[in-house]
Length: 430
Image 1 (cartoon, rainbow, N blue to C red):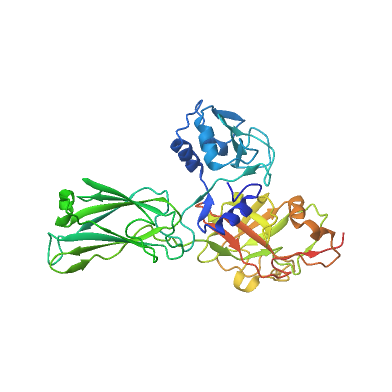
Image 2: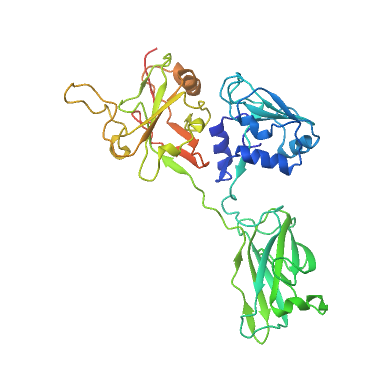
């Protein structure tokens, strides 16, 4: 919860993604998986994923294992209580979705509440689809990874005089004194016929300053004979430290030397995000804004040939200051239409004009791709703008950005220009 306490959804995601590029909000199904992994039993038919469903406050568990999970996630209130936002909508009505999960030493509640983020007492459950930049590979505490080897097709073929393995670690986080790797040697493939378990520390046999450990599998002990036929497997598990296991290579010595191609362990996943073009008050330039207005602030999100705005989860959208120090809640209204072409129309002074009536239309140069208009409540926009609303007439705000995600959890961010006709506001008279 370190990345999300007291933050809006967008700010929490941005905070986490600065370290873990693939970080995203956990799905309701993953909430259920978490409770299942913690062996938490329920008091009735409702489960923790019902925190996202419509209904009243309900105590779903009085299991002591709730406290065990709480100790691992960390508390947001004092030392013994954790609040996690689910689907906050600002309404405490039982006909709307619940707002958060509350966990204590021996209870778990899913609660209906009228409060919305950010609140100092609550955070977001964020998960990571990958590993931090430069830190790919098998991380400490991971499950055992088994690598199969079959040397029977080598020329010359087995038996070999000896077999040994090499394990290469992350160059950005070299092996240090606390790093420890647990190695399982198997006399057959797929982790069967366990021969020996090794637990090697940095100060033990085989480690060197380059971050590679070599473990000889040959010995006078006949226990290793099953491996010398060239069919075997090796299991690896990082048990302590911070370095990450990246590649495995084996070496065989018969009549001459043989080396297997390196096997990559847990390769880096490419960080995926969608950068979008937006225009505040599309077809107005500059974006004159009256801080006492009660009208919603419209923001147009443009679709392209590579991005369909129908994929956006509207509930995740927030309008934020560029430094993410403040954000609105989600839009109160939205609509979809082909408003214009972001390649030519951003910052336009006005939309197209109907030649027969002379009236301004609500589009400029349609490009064949639907666009999403999101309307943000005036009170939330003004709270987000903060001291801007106390400044003199014609003061220009910092750039405002849209943040959110698609229905599959892919983060989306708007380009920052900054431009008083695109992503900035200009203070109008009081």
